[in-house]
Length: 369
Ligand code: ADP
Ligand code: MG
Image 1 (tube, rainbow, N blue to C red):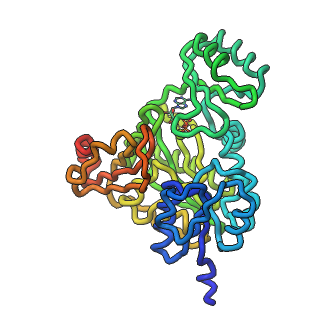
Image 2: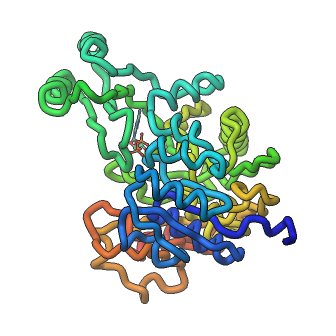
Image 3: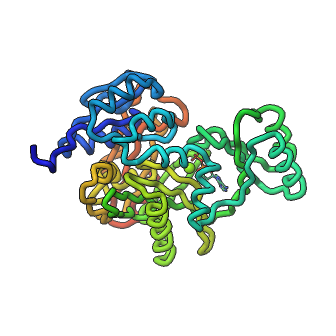
């Protein structure tokens, strides 16, 4: 067979919306998709060639996926490390990147070891470290984000401490001595940004346009692209992305959430996969983050990431479904993930608002939801 077509089947660990959008991009390129997910009705199942319905930690199912696929990817970071290790020989993203991004403490250490800055933080891995932090906090009361080191997303597993009374509520009602936490001093940012970079085994890297992100209740509400920042800041954010991609020996996609204050940039967190704040690329770029991710894990030449239109990406959450109206959305681009149940705060889809000028995108975005 033509060696250029040696990769035919791509396996995806995790069948959420990111897996679904990876699968749609991969199928357009002629690949077959097998998804492993415990849910029959997961968003990826209806666009994959085959669903391996199984818990993520099922060794037999992982071995079956390994045998049936030429390349394997994960679409979220909370899949078990043990499964990633079983799949390692066909997993360009690697279990190591998963290990780093699964744990906020390891992740922050990795970021700092590359010379980049994070928010100031204390680790709380033991009762003793909780006491050390409590003493520090009593002396230096400051708004603090207490986050579980593992398993959190969309603000889940976070407690905001405004004063010592909040810490005693946390200690008495929420603290679990079997878990680790980070207590992060609130960073008084002007703006949140994200950079999405894809890199292939041959060392080719490309960064998408930097997005400006607005969160509501710690869930992404909208991404504005291009971010309204000076050229020097944009360059700096891109450099951080490339530095992390090289430093972590990335093969695949890395999303980097950033805090910006004046000219200072701190790295908030990393995701080893396409990211919600990169969904603008589906309609506003020559190559989407999902297509680029597939190219990167297959070690194919990367696509052109040029931005062809400014864009405001609006998330559609469970509570927005009632008022969603295709007439009102009009010419703008609705993407729905096929989720059957619309729960509060659950990401059901998104809308890419495209106009000639960014200001027009922002105006149109106000009238859609
Ligand atoms: P998640 O994994 O839930 O996305 P994040 O650490 O990104 O967790 O937190 C979600 C949001 O909460 C951030 O995008 C930001 O708006 C806010 N936040 C988190 N940590 C801090 C911090 N140290 N300072 C200021 N805001 C923060
Ligand atoms: Mg985040």
